[in-house]
Image 1 (cartoon, rainbow, N blue to C red):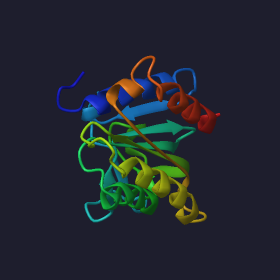
Image 2 (cartoon, helix red, strand yellow):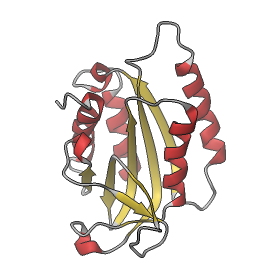
Image 3 (spheres, rainbow, N blue to C red):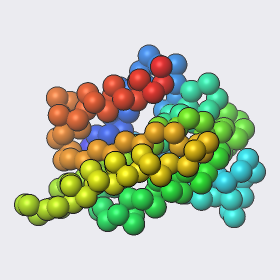
Length: 180
């Protein structure tokens, strides 16, 4: 497990389990155990101006991005959390020279999942309640007809997503259900 990004590493392992047998391709960034940046673009032309964000992980099925995952281990403030969802919602394509020979792959009917680390929260923190409220509210602000059709926010400790952890099965099942 990466000493610098333990939650990224364990969620990367969960994602591997999620796509197994799903006729899908998982792409992880380096923090999650992969070997690349995962840039999303506004449009199907690769350029610095069109690149809007890099995501921690994505799942490709039927030549389209269907799942995007962002993991936040340090800055769990609403602006950071919502900003990651918004930049993904503004994107339309994933383009990488090592994937599909650089062919732009559209974001279609995307399940956007955010995993937030609770390690640094103090006892009695109100952040989990705030995150629950954000999750509920996000369902009402997803742009109709946009690339992101569903949103899921999960939070916990590394052990909650590790083998036998209380969130692992729910995460795997949600991804598999979306890819079915």
